[in-house]
Image (tube, rainbow, N blue to C red; front, top):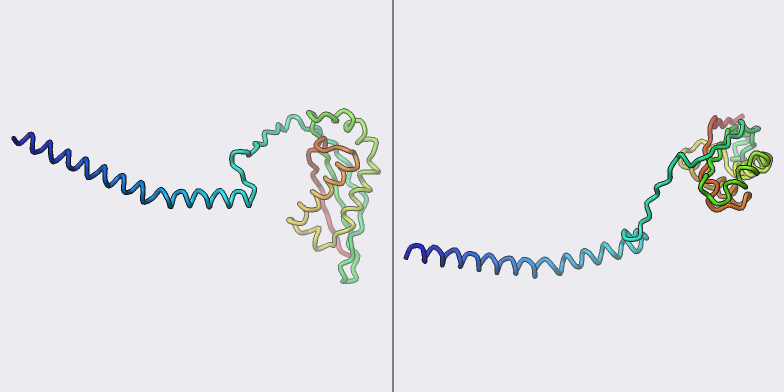
Length: 172
């Protein structure tokens, strides 16, 4: 009789546990669905579709670099202080060897240094001394020059990136 009583108590506890689990599921599911909907809406607004993320697996071994010697000084835009500001820089163009137009770029870029210097002068001349010494602004300048070089050479992805060296701005 004791075994049957213990079995009945265990069965009753299992049923109570089952009822509580069902109650928990029906209590938390609507709020979990609302949370999921909110996260999906935020992801759509920020264009962070997790399913469609493309991983960038660019191999640095596929880069070919063309380095320009430190360029002539470039006059910067006046900032209203009456002082003249000058920028001296070196430029490295990183080309993607796997790009379809790599051969054409590799042949044309060394022959077109004056075009590159001119594009750089046009971009740098828009900015003031305070802007070119600001690290955040240097990233914007780099992106603008990269886009200008891509347009100049008619390539979408042949020029992978650019980098500066010996970046020296001086106010006189």
